[in-house]
Image (cartoon, rainbow, N blue to C red):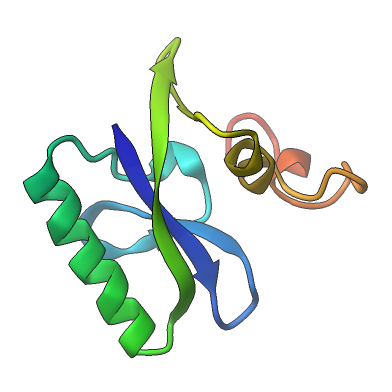
Length: 99
């Protein structure tokens, strides 16, 4: 399983490709991709966002589903999903669990 991630050019926020080609701020709202055709189509949407100067540095990441939650496989992506590690009162980790 994979999701597409990148940074929004306007504010640098880490975002993920959601349903209908929208970019979402929470990993839990990301569109989970299975299969090469689905991944290829999603990457095309992401590349168009690059061309439109909405996004920078878009790429696919591996994820798993644990207890119904989408979880990145690599530590780097776990950190990106949570926010800055040195300021826990800022970033995505500071949001409520229901967000």
